[in-house]
Length: 314
Image (cartoon, rainbow, N blue to C red; front, side, top):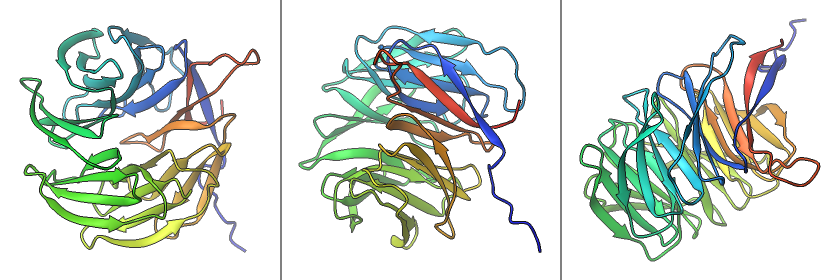
């Protein structure tokens, strides 16, 4: 009888520590060689990661924000440019080689979401007041602002950049055309608020994580729900597709990160955790998954760590 191969079974996690408080966001750059982490300690850090090696890890600190760095994203076309969004109402652009801030944009609210348009020309920023601001990356100035009269959670562009998605507190996904931000469709996705959204790198699907503890997978062209995953028992905080679009990782306050097969909906592996997770993100080139959460040490202080799963045993 053929042995059933369990993907990820013999792989391990490594821990990276540098922040003084919990890590809110992790993100890989476009060539998969650098990872950024953003923290409640008001800094971001850039880590040089060797996908297969055990080399010494260097990190660069990005200092300047005066409040929590809640989310960050890399330029999809340039492996050394990164944007950070903070509760201090600023968005900053950094050069990851020097750790220097090259641009600052002062916005009107506490920023909680940030994402690059796939061609690298625009950045969308969402704040706590349900306002979306679009920045032109070259001038680093707002070119559009839109306030919504409902709770806006995560935001995303499709792969071609002509559609823009909002997950809302009403349990819907709002689909807008881009750049007009004209309303195209309201998708009643979940019975409770939709928290997070991820786009399949091959452009076939998007996934939504909800307070009802479900993850739904949608055909991006047809705007139809293909299936839902029921692996988690708590509100889904964060989701990410692997680089091939074959797997999806999702996490919540459950003490594991679930990895499921997108086609079958079956869970193929669960990475144990000690705390609720804030951010999971797959590497764009390798089966490496970064994840970060509310880890505390035995004195109940934030550990300020993140981990990467997918390394062979030492």
